[in-house]
Image (cartoon, rainbow, N blue to C red):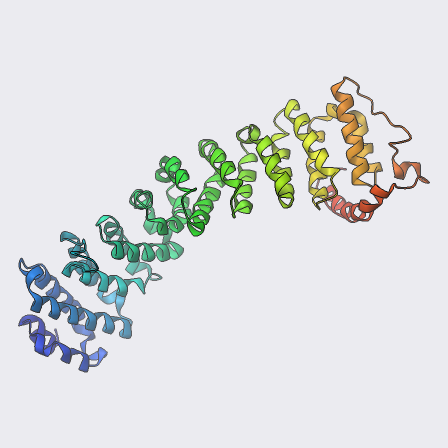
Length: 423
């Protein structure tokens, strides 16, 4: 039964006694809260509420008292249905600001209830009631409410993404209308409901250049999730946009990881962009390791691409300015193991006998040239000897620089060989 003071204030809309509600203990009124919320809904639904200042003031004070009591007694689940019911009723009325910074009576109610519900984003029973209503506020023309709802939905996606999945289309449309905050929801939602996002992928990709860094990051996270699902159509849409963005992005690492993911199952999508990737790698040498993995993937498509990609990988192997020689050698070995005719029977000797990256690069480069001209036999001379095989031969000054590095890398090769990569 509703507390007599609530009955007086709400039944008679007595503003003079409304403040007395705060003198009561939370536990004293906790059993009255659901009934009080139902009574508020009746008052706020009356035809003259929007112009009745007394009724508006009574409702605002009562809602503040109710939400405080709910928070202090931890009774949100008990009263969630009536709280969300009042929240939902606000959608039947105008929520657009009347003037600059002037909320409508209904947007004030909605805002107060949102604040109460937001604190309970980690309670699934509350979210199950709240999420379907929260998404409706996204398109009602009230910026503050939209922002608060986006905040709530973002938090909800952390613990209960499946509740948002049914509303993916509404969420995507809100993003496309400029609500970048909701981008953080998409990676979690995509796992449950990829189709609506895939449908709008070209429009979402078009946002990438105009978003601020946090928005870009969340959109790229989404693309990474999408790429992992191995959907060729998605991959083909993503690649051109990502490579354009790679040139001047602060998110180069995640972009290249997406491209590596795509290259693993759709290498041809990257093929025509290799010259651009090469140019970016020259500008940013710290990206060579990731570039090598992309070239390595494309190099497995056919022998023609294998030769082309090997030329780039070998040129990088000869460059002592970076520290990715082990990765480069693994990619080169993988391609030449797949297309054995490129290096012929001498390939094993090249990898086993040389103890210098620059020497290996020189031998590989020469063999690639020989293969081009139709020769299948690697040519050795006094200038290109296998130091280990010759035993007493001394390393050149250039080779000395990376001799020690290679010895360390050989431990890595031994590990790879143990896992099934034969050197």
